[in-house]
Length: 603
Image (tube, rainbow, N blue to C red):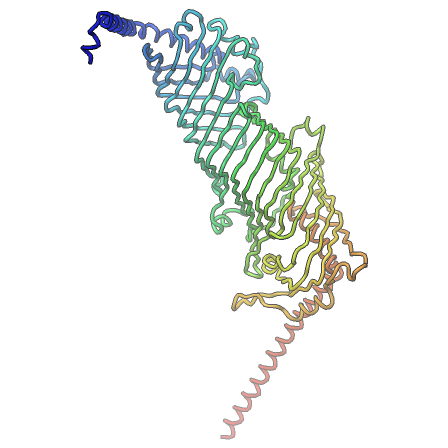
């Protein structure tokens, strides 16, 4: 076939010309490669120095220009800051918050236009691919707003004397190894990431884009993706992880899939901590309109909406918890928000399909009980620590709906004052119809009380509270409530009914219906609850609510005191009966002994 191809003269001429052309390119490529490499090195170093105001230096071992492929390979690149320049800027209060050290084994520039660089002073590259990059980033909060250097120049103005523009189509960094050192807190926090992929698209630095706020770091879009990340908290009590994270600056969106926080096993955890134990998982987390650049620079968190979707939150009460001497007002949401120690503004937080469980161990029953709020959803509005936002609106409102014990519809609305020194807040809501026997899984182990019968028709509550007191009212409508008082049999580790207290409570204390009869006005319990300083937020809120539930079913303070006195009297009577029984047994034993002695004497 080859010989047939060269049968005609013009075929041979074409082949010879093509071969000569290729040969000339190959012959020219060698001197061009050696000629362009030092030019490239000189230009790149000049660009880095000027664009960073002499803060960063770049070096590499060699560069190769491949004319036929239209690529440049640069080997063993090292980018690092000049510590003398950085320290000088620290004294001038213009040092950046982030410092970067980078090493790359190989960097490939594709679809480059070297003649544009040399003759037109325009750096135009189709793609930059980075092989095995190693990044070390350190963060120190040196300032909270953009610093202005003396000459106040943009990046384009800094390079404009050497280049008219810089354009890179795509920048691809795969399998990045990143070490991040955060010095902004009281303790150094180090994070190490693997399986990190970074990409930037349509980077353009010219006179038009120098003020284009739609671009991030002069790029149309920056995408970061991280897979299978896990780490431990600094105290070693928890492991947190996620399956996938993706950040897009073009969409201003952060997505996290498979997020979870897992504590140590129960015995190990409570041996090391006096706090309650938490565990949570979320199928997805999404942050919309997230201002990544301000977070990267200054740890300022700004977003329009945070959505938490499909998961669970489990809280385990510490059975070995010792009383705290400090004021636990820090657990109030409108106080704890400031412990994040960050400039924060979230317009909306959406909670969707999250199951909440609280589990506690009771030493008297030797059992654990769990209260659940299933399929919880709701909205948090105006979650912020930003002074200018608080001047416009200092209330954070929370609306939640749930299924209490997976049966009764529960609704609650909180309003937190974010600027009041007394941490004032209000809460009101309702609990819908349910069979009260459903809550025995919690009341039996936690309160040694069994609901034998009863139907809740509706419960409404409305409270105003602060760090000192809570005042409000509770209206609880129900029918045919009967209870049994329990005690634990330590021998068989079972819960048994105490007949006398049960009979007394059902016949003399408990109000079985509210209202007492059809057509009557329902009882309303008005509450004033005082908070002790060691009481945390949720316990205080529950105490206020419970202070309204008790008198609604007949357990007002006078009745409770009488009940306590009765229980104490019954215990005293039981103790006296036991003493008398022992005395009788002792007297019978003494009589038997005397009879035995008389028999021996008669014999």
